[in-house]
Image: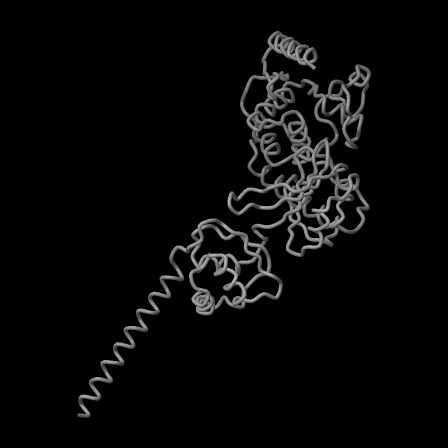
Length: 385
């Protein structure tokens, strides 16, 4: 009898073990396999939130099939205590394992509300936008000029939300004065800017910021980024370019930046100026003359006068030989690289072609024909306005 009881107990024990093994296997499959979420969602994890709270929210949103398995998986992978507050994009079909990685990885928020302060060449703006999880595209909710327009309600609401992300985006070709004036109008930044950064020393890019950050600290980040970009480009330069120092490269890059907004043209435009420097020709470029008039403080807002084109100033490249004494804007990486690795071309002239790009020429006769064509296009546009 005892043998029978022992045998039955052993059998029951084995069945239980097999059942537990099957249950564990099922749980593992639930944890690692594709989840039930049909459309991406924006998951908000509040400050002080817990994995239990997140698991219930995910189950209610249809992102996980079982909140308990989600919590057990977080415990098993030792990530329960790594939960980060913020707003996170959870893609459709994400497994529990993938979702746990999203909410514990750290770094910037990946969805929700974002405020972008745009520093442009001709304007500055603040944009409030929301990421639509279904399309993974931003939807603009407010757009205004900081320091000038009335503050929209959407912006005021965003300022009260601790999960909102902020960033400053500096356009290629903006001057240091324009950058500093724009930063002064951003109310989430603090501190005075006591000294204008050297022209050309700020890297155009998108910088994530936090409320209370010092303006001077942000400018230092921009300067450090530009120093790194210039050093790398100088290290990889074409040794035949007629530029003696990284500073000269920055000057030429700023001219290239102001002469063309077409990415594919940068190295061609660079080749024109490189050929002119090699041949001892004057650069004859309007943007340098304009900088001599405005000193980088705002936009000229009109055409250059003949008197300005004839007047000898340090920045009038129709009169002075070689490069002007300093950059005329803050160039981006592509223009810096173009200045140091230009295309090999015979071109020494270029003029607008009416498409946003330029027509290039080797001889003055070709150039004059291109200019005549451009004048014709200008006349037709003026007649239609």
